[in-house]
Image (cartoon, rainbow, N blue to C red):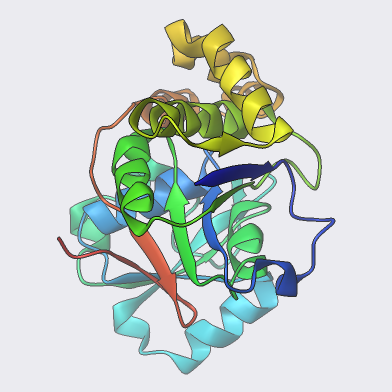
Length: 241
């Protein structure tokens, strides 16, 4: 099993992902929101790459069963029902609903990787569940960090490092690319206090400045759920156990 990490998807076209097994990570906060929404009963999440397309899809859907959720530069998009805080996606709001989801980085990364043979969404909340499932597939793995507008970000790389560390522990013959190995080293540096790390990242500081301190705490929880979001035909649903 070979494991590679992309610190950004900007330098790759959609066809790069054809036939690959991928995990998209956007810790702060798209991945965490998707995992939370599905854990709390959402029927599906539909990631989109533009606000205009989100509006179009919602217009074509059954409005009573559909919610628009997401953010632009951390803040809820005008006209959306929900922002991008995992704390908003509670059972009373999302149970049985389809959520059309747009975010600055995460939803775009998922859409970019849409031609993958297997495409999952991961974060600290579901790291071990995703790892266990990917190992069971017995395929090479691409971990795609959503990053920050095409640039590297620390939190996604460290989450990737957590997953890769677990893979190496369970599969001694795993082969790591240089980027995957770098993520393992980063994880070892910050593993003792994930919450502190998240608070000190560029995006963590921006979230705190905009009043989302509690979101950071939620995003820092490790293995709080075994939900595995799986993308297929434009829609993300949880894998049924």
